[in-house]
Length: 538
Image (cartoon, rainbow, N blue to C red; front, side, top):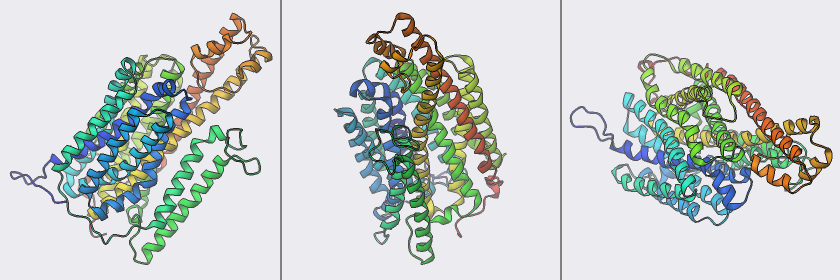
């Protein structure tokens, strides 16, 4: 792609960034709309929330599994042409969501969206690196980071309103409209033709794709199939062992095989699926680790809050949008403004401070959160978490882009897409498994200790093997038993107390993960923008 400098000051035109910004909004709006739609899909399709959340997991899985292959395909075909093609594909995915008769169709729609995003993600990075340098590049990266956040704000607000007044499907009409808009603006992009001589390493593509599929399926089914021993829901068992941990181990092995194969190919002088020189230094690897953790934490929060508000409390999607508003607005503002601090503080300082903020916010929330998300202490905790989140997402992206030469921008984009979407899928899956497991332990203990709940009643409604249900749903189940009014109220009280205890303990676990991430953040670069070495000779 050729740069289009401004005639007056020699700076590149911002028009290409408008198109790329809208493309990021398209993807992020789609992802943010999924949690808002959970309650509607549960009611519409008659499935548990963990099944409906598979739409989130499948999207992230498709992007993470295909993004490296997508980057090479973009280099071969040409970024602008392939960009337009996959925008049309994304539009088709929104049509599937709008017309889906079953949850399987919705999951398929998000699989198609993920496949399209697998090319859009590296395309955005490649086109930014080609068009902008220095402060303009940092501003462009900040704009892409803020696009994710503003999409979250608008998706939760618009999606919440539509979900409450009309239904969840019209939300994806907006996604379709965004796709049409992005396609129209894509004609402002200019780029060189692709290189037909580029060959895609199919062996590496198969290894990394299989590794990510195995890891995501393993983590996503830890609760349903069993964390160790296989449950009745498991598709198969190996000596009584659940397939979930076996898939996780298999995914790790396949990932290692991918790295070994790629390094061998690079030593032989052949074109790899991804050039691993972009993560040669400990500082760049630290940026990848930090990116994984911060995106996984964001996914956990975006799954947990809608789960509690819509499913547990039985409130509307609009209530969810209001509860998430402080967090998403804070992420948007921070992602946009954090670039102003790059000239004063090195990435290491900003990174460590960001994880300190997210850790402190999660610990605070674990103590102050109640069943009412609109309290001032809860909003304060979400705001602080949003400050740390917004700063970290933009920071680690900028570290990776500035450390690599422009011709490696597609590789940086594929690395970013793989890391972010695998982290999002794993974060959502682990959050669900963690909360359901903690809830089961909490309810089991409370049931055993409660004098109003005899074993006969527990056997009738299976209270020691529960998922997240609202109080009204629990009362409806108990009405079909011989439980007395006092026993029904006792069971509802156990449900409320156990859910809140589960939420608080889950937030503490996430705080521990955030605290551990301070270690890789402490290995981020110390340099300021004026000291950044020119990566081109590499």
